[in-house]
Length: 100
Image (cartoon, rainbow, N blue to C red; front, side, top):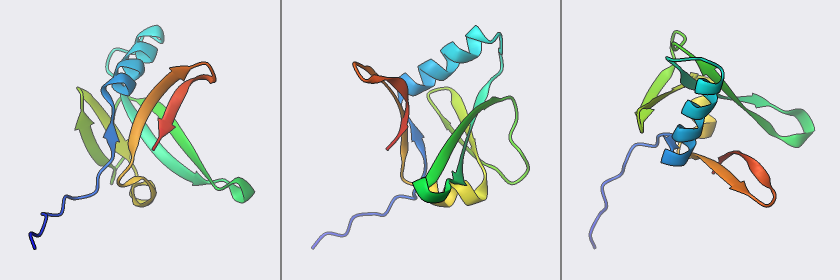
């Protein structure tokens, strides 16, 4: 039996989501923008995901770079987000960012 090499869990962003982050940043006249991704306890409804356009990471953030965009994630949120992909979906039921 062949053993697969384990890959470290990380957070990914799709190219479409990265494009939309840059588009939103341009609309706000923010030239050097990266994305902070976080998780907060949401009470009865579970977790609440947060996205914010920022220039620099905070102390202790994990920094993930993909498709020319940097994601900044605090350590607590990283535990919940490791292994996920941030995507942007647009369709009949609305448009928005989705974490899969």
